[in-house]
Length: 78
Image 1 (cartoon, rainbow, N blue to C red):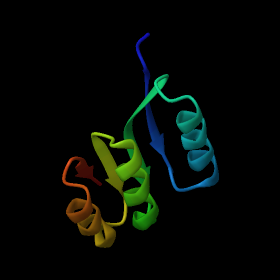
Image 2: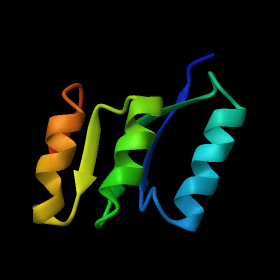
Image 3: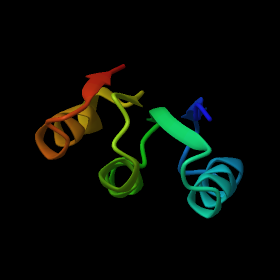
Image 4: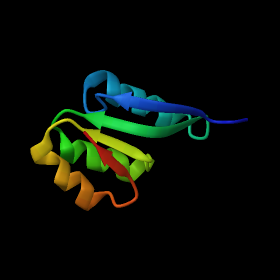
């Protein structure tokens, strides 16, 4: 079975974290390909290290550099 690819905007919020709980519980059924936050870079980094998405989005330009430094495997976009 092919995993369902998911992108989660607002991954640090309530719905985003609940979605990641489902992905965690159903390992192999879903593949996280992108995560996005407005400003919660610490949460995003933790999530990205666990789920290894190809792309992460950080809306706050002041926080974006931290994601770039911490996540060399991911493309960091605005």
